[in-house]
Image (cartoon, rainbow, N blue to C red; front, side, top):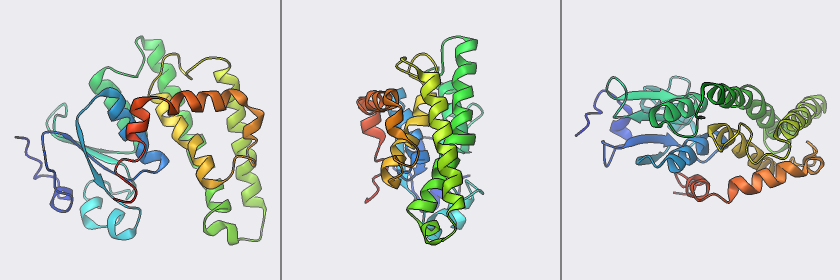
Length: 232
């Protein structure tokens, strides 16, 4: 039986099976990256619902695992040197693909391309579309100055053009289906939630809709999209 007592978070979110990887998350674009990856890789895991409310993500329990107070985070009881706590969705994806040997490319060149697109999503697509969402759906929409929204809409259009051009007529962005696609497509899905498709010129890139549909048709994606349940 794995001993996770070194992780204070487990006192609040108590593992039912400590031998399984523990996921602390909420079904946001960043959160579902990890649940989808776990489903696609076939790794047994246990999901704990950590909402975005301060009572959860800024609690002492959660901060003991992730001092950056953002979901997702994991504890792997079968880490390389014993139980391992890890946070940042991109870092978790890279860790999981290294752990399992799955969805990260089969050659060194493949792995470099996969990592490149994961980094592109982490540094560009996610932050820019997230900021656009803030200025269109959340508190930022009350700001009269249109320049912030226009700035992020323009950058969103540029990033979608980069993705569309690189994807071309291929099925997946870095060769075979990989964690790069798992990193990217949940943020494309966020455009629906934010209501910002028109702002970023989604209809100018029909290959992105086909890419999105291929991704959403996967069983592992469907299994991981609402993990842990938003309304649990």
